[in-house]
Length: 35
Image: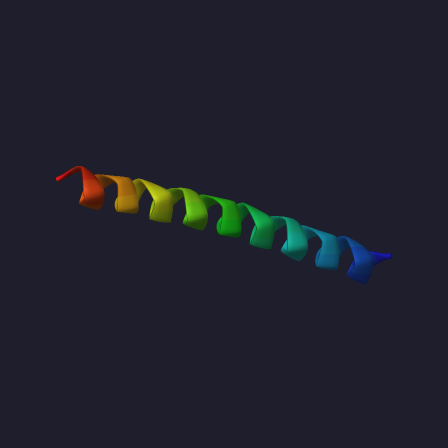
């Protein structure tokens, strides 16, 4: 049960990081192409 919760938390954190990373990358691309 504990390992399942830990895996779930790691997966959730990974998804958040991937989402934030892609958002930051998109923002960076927009800034670069805007100039």
